[in-house]
Image (cartoon, rainbow, N blue to C red; front, side, top):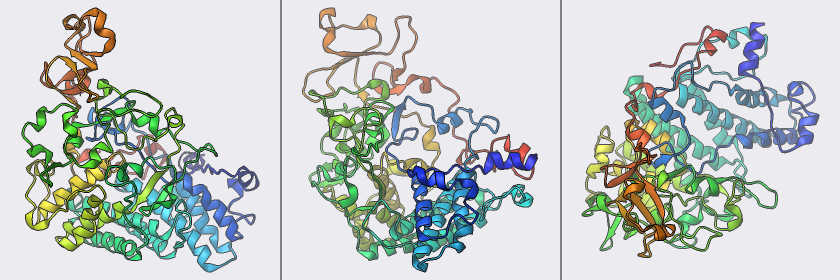
Amino acid sequence: MKVNKYIYLLFGLLLTSCNDSFLERYPDTELSDKTYFKTEKDLELYTNTFYNDLPYYYLDYATDNASIYSEPTEIVNMMHGGITPSSVEGWDNWGKLRKYNVLLENVHKTIGNSDNINNYIGIARLMRAQWYYDMVKRYNEVPWYSTSIKDTDVDLLYKKKDSRELVVDSVFADLEYAAKNISTEMKNRTVINKWYAYGLLARIALHEASFRKYHDELKLETSAAAYYEKAIKACEKIMESQLFSIDKTGGPDQAYENLFANNNLSTSPEIILFKDFDDKQNIKHDASRRVFSYVSSLSRSLMENYEYIENGKAIPFTSVPNYDKMSMTETFKNRDPRYKQTFMYPGYIRPGENKPFVPNLYLGGYPQTKFVAKTADQMDWIRSYNDIPILRYAEVLFIYAEAKAELGLLTQVDLDATVNLVRERVGMPAILLTSLELNKNLEKQYPNVTGSQKNILLEIRRERRIEFACEYFRYDDLMRWKAGKLLEEIQQGVYIDKFGLHDFTGDGIADIGIFESEATNTVPENERSKYVFYYMKEKSGSQTAICLSEKDHGYIMASTEVNSATRKFEEPKYYYFPIPKTQFTINENLTQTIFW
């Protein structure tokens, strides 16, 4: 039967929980009858399953923050023409939506304290809002469902997509209810609280505001200001609570790094919500193994965004003489301390090893150390138990500053209470509006930024990029700013001035040899065991995986990308994803995503 096939594909619900007895007692086929949703405890157990849906991230590869990456990604596949309605994946995770709607349509049966009940309703609506906005970001328009779909709901099963405006309005109705009704309880920062609700509201409002402002193809520019204002008001709620502050534990040289290698974020004043990992309970992740010189390394482009300190003054790194000819070791001199706490610095010794790590040039040569744990037992696959932030106060401050600047309202007082407060953590001097000069390189990257506060908007974008590097904000930021063309650029790694031996550990002793081919290697055979060698050509004469941007010198690049003629970011098409072609045989009333 056609209707049942549709339900199977789009609305199958698989509940997950760490409580096996809960699943055995209350299978999903019985959740809507009289056996459940009777007590507050039922709501608590049911919403506990939502925590598996909270996203957490620890890398940025496949954006311009990464130089070379060894795994395929959707956006790169798209730029090579590999994403089509016939090949694309997605549109199959509607079971999560049904999970949230099942609670919302059955909660009227619950007997208990109304504040507690409203708290769980708020959590369900918050999760529904998060899920739906992710769909909006991908498809622009989707059908809005506020109830779980039954096989008799033919009209709903075959409904058309709703407009972006209707879905986004519904998302914000959910977010505003959540912010008003979710508990303020902060004893455990792994539990969804009111301040996370305000933070998510602010995050989504900023995204929607900037997407509407910069994506003129939607013709929604006039409504952008209202969403910037929503973001500002939500941030003010959090800021006025005085419950959070920038974590400076460890001082300028360690405080930033400590946030991402911490085994107990529950005591950090900056954390609004975090994912708790635990060694004893065997709740672990693979960040330490995955991000450090395995999947990808960080990019020259990101590296150049960290400022240079000259006579106590912060200046653009790109204004330093010969900045574009510096070796990897030279780039670490006189830089914003966050650089050394994000990128692997010369002489870095990986936990459990006894000598400085030599970077993998096949990935570009700038390994990521942010999110790498501090102890040797966490270095293998699925062995890390350092906690991971889901929302931290620094993001709230950046949302506030950006939204105000987009509206032309940012003052020095605002800047000092937000971006400068975050910079203070690592001892960076304050940004002053009265003396801030236009950064020409940033202007080139973001040519669509205009307005009375253009200079500071560009600086906020630069600061946001480095403060939240490797936390998976970069892709969303480029999409909402309509800066996808930056993804088209082939990213670069470290600079190599010539073929020969090079020092990458900062001790003055060469450890890597780079030559055009093995045949041109000038190192005597009996000395080659001292070095790691990289060649631009195989013995057969074919190109290896990497090359130098200027053939015999320059920046390390992925040769497959350099030699590709298909890498292209089509605007505005690639700001959206197509709906899989198979879905149109299931629901004939669906229409394809705009520009597809």
